[in-house]
Length: 374
Ligand SMILES: Cc1ncc(COP(=O)(O)O)c(C=O)c1O
Image (cartoon, rainbow, N blue to C red; front, top):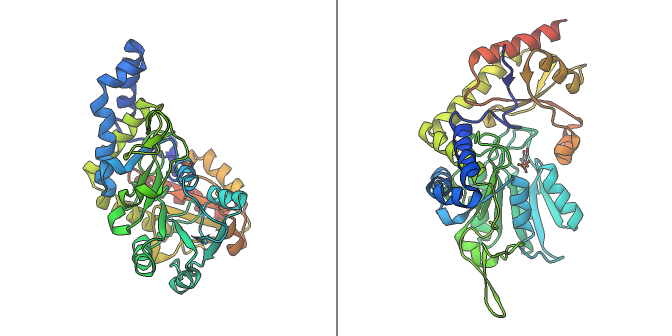
């Protein structure tokens, strides 16, 4: 029996054709060296912008190819000026690495409540925004809780209150998973990773930077790729400003292939199927008193988290691994605000993708029930 991957929120199985596309480039690189190989594959490398812009509905020049969400997010935050007076609004599901940045830099953060039903407390959001609010940063779907947050509604509210507030969306878990349309969300920045629901290779990610705010941003790292050196001054180019000269063409081709495959299936179809499979899984376990699921019915995605009473999540993980089931254990540091609020320190996460079958889910359920009934 093969291993079953229910850790798609960690890293999913790449779409068919992704590794082949990478291999083709690497073989050419072996023959000609990296630069000439990249010349020969220029069309395939550049297809990345075409495929991603189609998926998120933006201009091709608004996207920079990077290696991870964390890098993308940090490049953006380190490329804007925040004064001591200014504040950044975040939500109770904020990701741990982003918190590290705020704490380490002494950023004045305000945390907006997420209600028990999984919805943002919009009164709290409106109350926390003031004239010193520079950025609102949303984690669209959290690593430790699969509730989908209403990104579009937040975008509309921000636009009404003050269109100058920068709206940053961490789409690390939502991209390739649910429909992410930057023009509907009305965000200025959106970051994501390739290895999760996009089903691309590891070591890939991206940032979308709305052309409307391009002039306000001075990228942290400048080189001959994203800027032009004159005698006594430097001019930053207009497009893809977070990209520097060196990158992995093989991985970019791989991610492009994954997004092409995804676009061919259609994100709406994928989203629907993933949600259906989550509901199928949840329905089978929700009546077991020992199982406590944390997502809210009206906000379901492919990420399902729970605890089994009287059982450590790590033990559960080991047990499932012994049954060839891969999952993961988000822990306190994944999101200190969230875990503190829930008064727990860890969870078990089953993250389902389109390619997971009902038979795989049935097998997972059987293994869980066998253990609980013991
Ligand atoms: C919501 C969220 N944001 C950011 C990240 C960081 O992504 P990366 O590891 O690709 O930098 C993760 C990783 O799991 C995540 O779940």
